[in-house]
Length: 360
Image (cartoon, rainbow, N blue to C red; front, side, top):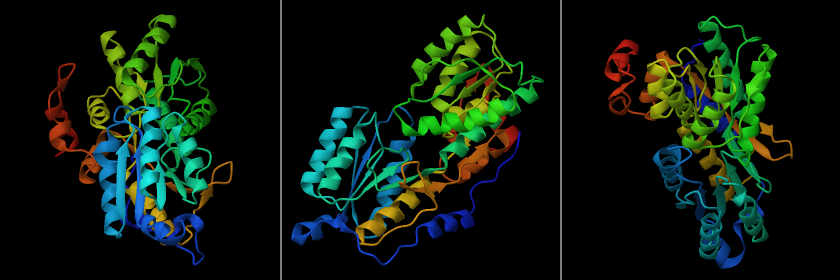
């Protein structure tokens, strides 16, 4: 497996360089006394707490700390996986006044909110997930995330002595209503199919471990109980897949992932998951804060990429993490050794595996 180093301070400086503020004014702060008051307030909506633990554990903290350190008020709320609640929260925030809105889309709910915000002259940042109507998009390089996942599957197949051209590989993608899911898929397919892989099965995409497990189990049954690799779009989906593999006594299967959550890191240390794509949330949040602060200050941020619709795209570089890189996630503060190194998986002590790979 290819080893990757954690994003360095120089890389963080590079993110900052992408966001040099211009001198032109921005019309998004509103007008009159109400606009002046609203311009000090950033309104943020997170999508849920189920698709990934990152939203409440990391994004909320880093966004709030960054915005407040810059002298702005942060109103950060979570839609709890409910599109109606997403809209209700947005209406309440807009009534109270927002200088900028930073939204993580949930099943298309952010588009309607963006329309309302822009009608009031409030700029909108799409955070992590793209959606129509945003003024800026801040996320990781999501096609590259997919490429790293595809490479993970190839690395796992190679380690097991499997030929990609004949390997049985199942594709377990993310929810298609999430604009990132297609980018992950496109990047992964580019690498996997470029090496000769043909999808043996591709159930409907979800961001849900239990549903992913059910979908994968059905696919596995249709394949006669044989599988060599699984492209799993994130660690939560991968964990559902791995549970099915364990119940069926299937070992040595190449499995990808994303997010470097605790379950994913544990699965990697014990050999059930080949690698994960680590997206240091702090770097993404800091990039988003810089864009928000520029807009709140009446300045114009710049970005190094564009989406297909022309939306400016600030893309942060992801990192591939295998067992030898787990300590880097701990060092960055995005996981703790106490959590990772507790318990066992299929009779394998996580404390022993942490000692083997230097996780502490």
